[in-house]
Length: 74
Picture 1: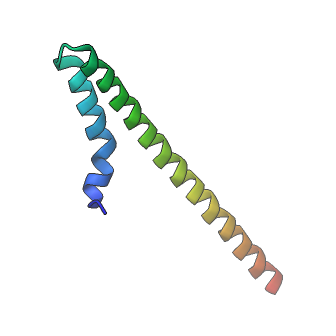
Picture 2 (picture 1 turned 180 degrees about the vertical axis):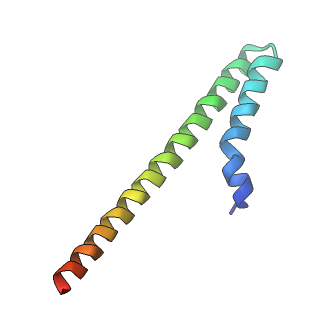
Picture 3 (picture 1 turned 120 degrees about the vertical axis):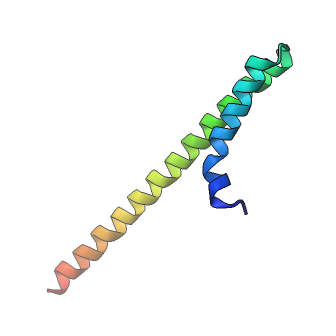
């Protein structure tokens, strides 16, 4: 398992690496690889955001069920 600071920084590191490859190395392969890395970073950010949003929605649902259960108990 990755340390938390590396896990959190991973999309940014991948995007920076991709941008560097696309801008510094004058080679078609480097440019294509750079764009692929940038897209990969965006996919990672999207997946994390989707996961966190889904988790918050699940927790909200559980909280509403608990509140409804307490209201019935009264």
